[in-house]
Image 1: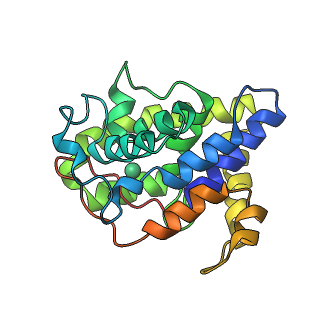
Image 2: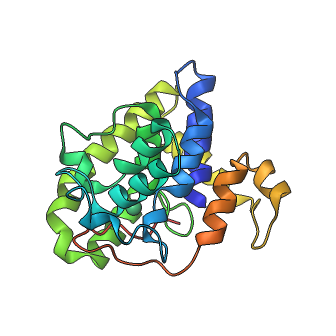
Length: 215
Ligand SMILES: [Fe+2]
């Protein structure tokens, strides 16, 4: 939930600064980026169509494919597909649009609350020593994307971080909040209803690059 709210806010800031970005698409993609980790979602998908291409994390591919099959537009499915660390080392799947950049960035700024890139990356290193190489390779790209978003908004990365953190300081969507809460947060209702219906224990996707921790 938090990643969707931060992604939406970053996209709104970019839009206010004249950038061509769709905050609703960024919010939906942020909200649903890990839907493939939810129980019962797309478990059959990795074995079909050859699975994810190189440069796409398995869970990100499952999430995006599952959403694509349900009619979500590319503006939502593509940011979901390229939000994993593997895409940051890929020419073909490197986050390119503002929606893609704010979703991957927001996912790496947030754990269960806003922690910023350094703490998030430290947490990944601690929890996933087996993925040390991909985490190491990803860090400069994440800092570059953060700097790029901040520059386009006319602020420093520190100022951007403080602003995005403030979005999560006020709890708009308390547990069990209904459509009014979702509307107040600007979250697409159908996306939130979908996610709420599927929320459950996170599952590991076979062959995945771990990047869990975002909420
Ligand atoms: Fe993820």
